Image 1 (tube, each protein chain N blue to C red):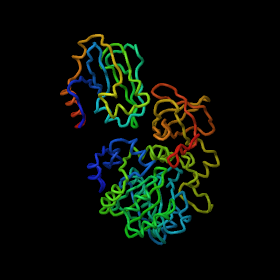
Image 2: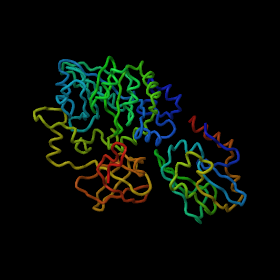
Image 3: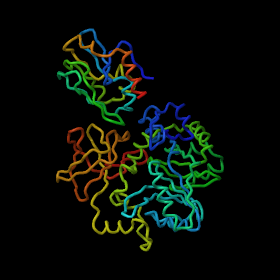
Length: 132
Length: 362
């Protein structure tokens, strides 16, 4: 059973979003997503200062099984990317919601988080996907 | 409904992620493919390969029949227990399947075929057997377990009696020992030392439990694929199929051209191709940058040639991606791969990529 922390927001493309105190968000991929991908071997993080639109492919996670795009769950500016993933992509597998974070984004519109799913909705989505 | 091996409950209990592989519900990993890969390279890993087909061919004409349908020459198997790797070809020289043949005793042979080719193989074998005095019997009652890695001998030794343990320690590669209704062969698909055990399905769980108790860790099809790729071993359906000949698949070494009067199926087509020149080759590539080479990706050479990755993946031992690819003969590159719209340079190398747990390419 996948771990879906209740204090995070989620995109249907399997990214999680944590709201930080300073008007920025931290983004990663969900435990469900890392489990489906299998062992990660490369992570390509976005350039800092890049402006991103919600739904735009901004990072790539490549596993033993497949390469997969990571989408910006919100519009804004990338202010940080997890440099540790360069040498330790497996952090996404071992700690998807912690050390395996991918990027931080400064939101264009603080209300944009309202568009995302809460933990209950996301859990329902992945349950339906597993059954489908 | 997917078929299940006798070890299905063991896989579930060990937390395997199960997938459909050629109609079988098989473990792809038990958590981490890379950990399983490393386990085989450094210690011992355990694979359920019961989905593979086991076919016994016996009778007065068994040798003559195999000499007719296989590209390698079964007459080269002189002592009981000897085994070889071979292709079975169609009339055009295309590969119907690649398989291992074990010589059990006079007039008795065992063939192990790919799960995905089982039905086609048995149909082909049975059809051609009609003109020979042979009996073809599929052993659906058999299970097959592979234990692979530098500690494989030790682990399997713990699981068998002392007399057999001694016999295994002196067993050479590509040799097998038949003991009761078990066949234990020093063969595998990982590039490491190891054994494949064909045994009655009813005994499979017991052997599996003994091997895990002896320290062999269960490994899934994911690790099996990355291990065989590092070892430069081919996968049917990717690196070859009915439209490729052994000469186009870097398997010319498995074709027994002599004696010249052995008329095996596909021989005249292979000879014609050898005479005319083999148009395509299967070669190895390494991607030194980031990214993973994968089956189906397109290659381009500076000279304008095009090729395709047949098998690709991440090599845990090398820490980068490796691949086998089919390219036009005579095009020496340099080559680039089209990876998600970007052209990345790849370096041509000669497989195997890894041998005995160590990098084997320069």
